[in-house]
Length: 527
Ligand SMILES: Cc1cc2nc3c(=O)[nH]c(=O)nc-3n(C[C@H](O)[C@H](O)[C@H](O)COP(=O)(O)OP(=O)(O)OC[C@H]3O[C@@H](n4cnc5c(N)ncnc54)[C@H](O)[C@@H]3O)c2cc1C
Image 1 (cartoon, rainbow, N blue to C red):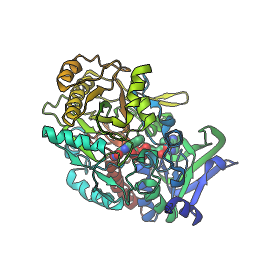
Image 2: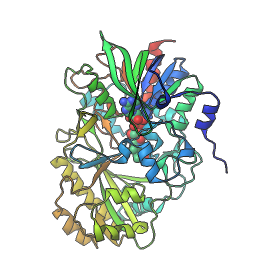
Image 3: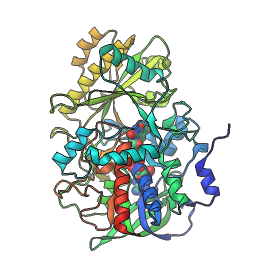
Image 4: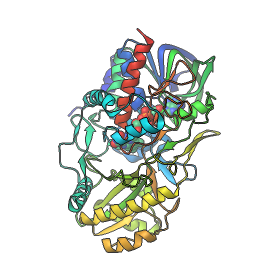
């Protein structure tokens, strides 16, 4: 069956796409609006502004790939579509970070879970961070608009066995669980969303908003990495970028982008580091601080029957049983499962030699539950700080006692859940931890675990914050509409504007907020 490939079709139809790796001369570009980054924020902003009649240029460091390149192989997907070939880590190497680097950004490789911003999070932003206009009622039409645009619906089919175990455990224990809404259309239930959707069912930016913007006359410049925002008298004059080749090396070609208005949408870590490198005003020293990760701990479980966690929609059930604990000083955590692919699991689990070989030989029976810890809601949870390095940036994210307290509670919950779902053995993913044979044993062993950076496996696919929004300049660099407090013609529209993490997967929050903010910007810019 022939797969419809909107990217190849668009290119044939004459989209304005410039692959900067092929340029032989320095070049200058000009439009009404220049957008840096084409992920959840950049993609939506490009569509909204183009539809409002503005000329738009999208500048993207990654390459333009399409379903013909998505061949369901980790060895190809990670180097081609992920930041640092999916091996990115925090400065002390204690947390693995997954982020996209391709046209479509992280949406090209994400797992399609689509959740509105939890109401307590929006309330907290209003009360503690002076965010205005983003209450649940005010955001409702924007979520509805994006849910319709990206075909976001509850997953109609039986969960794969990895997710089923999460549901069974919750049912057995009487815990809350929810069927996940996904942004897919005609999904084949393959399970390879994280390697780029080979059948274009995932309604990522790559096949929705970016094609719409390009069909409406926008220009896409791929393999072009912005390195400097030049400004004078509270106005951005230009953004400078370098062309990159396939191996991410600079080709020596420089690009200059001029516009009436500039939008930074390079994602958390990268938007703040671009702003830091450009020495944009930051009188209250906020830039790059309060970068959040939903740092996640993992629990493996071996079942008698195969789980085949690589196959089927990667996420279709979550549990919010523990996200909002009664004690507000405690960090809460959301329970989900990840897709289980061999390289991902081999590199994100512990052990070596026999113990690792044993784990990998049980691969098809392996169920994995993750607990995403909701960071940023208390003085004990300040997140990380982006720091510039000689060749880029790094995130310094200290794991604090309040994180370890949540991690230990999360290991307990996950083990209880997995045994309740019928697991034969449970393995908290932590250096030296033996398989636990019963919930009784887990209750004895988990409180003794010597949790520590590099011993405990911690990972994140949700990078947020670092350029917070607030109406109070002491707390935010941009307004609740994403407009810079200091530079008149600069906005930020991506996950970096979150004042805290969310307690939910971030893509729909970014879609909804950007739809709102880009619509307001389009009005402000006039026709
Ligand atoms: C493996 C994985 C699974 C995920 N699963 C889910 C999920 O199921 N549900 C969910 O809600 N969220 C999920 N997420 C997270 C979600 O996709 C992101 O939170 C969201 O896409 C972030 O949007 P953004 O616009 O902030 O940045 P991104 O989508 O990351 O886009 C930023 C873009 O900017 C580009 N860029 C960076 N620096 C520069 C520069 N200097 N010049 C030019 N371009 C630049 C990058 O290459 C990238 O393409 C997942 C993420 C990953 C990595």
